[in-house]
Image (cartoon, rainbow, N blue to C red; front, side):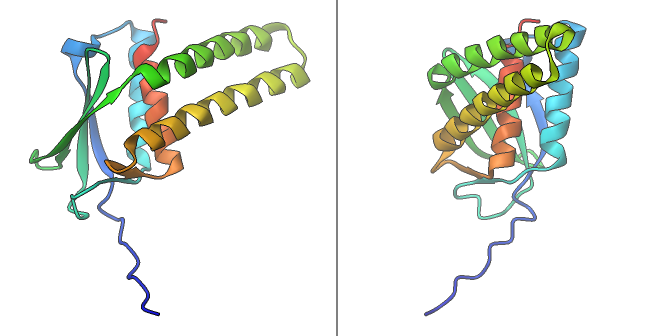
Length: 165
């Protein structure tokens, strides 16, 4: 049996993320800060391999919203276009709504609840976040290969794009 060579993922990564201000808009300082943290965490560690790019990264990712779709404009580090993908936001609406609801419960619980109650709410929050991450991974299947941790970081960024403060 012939073994397949192990794939070198050292260049399959995002090194820059920009947000389309025309479609996403700017927000208050708290939301801008959360967006910056989400982008920093994503760039710090990720696996991002667009199908057909043959490991010829690293990549930059420009994110925008067009209609009811999330746009991923993927380019090489030098700006050369690789591919643009449009992902429907519909599969994420309920998950994002549930995530915000449980985050609100968590922040309220921190003030008054017992540690056991806070931990239970936080486990629920992580579970919803994981569900969103798996949904995103599924939506990217056949378009961009990402590991679960990268999917989690991308989902965090998607939630921050929806956050109204």
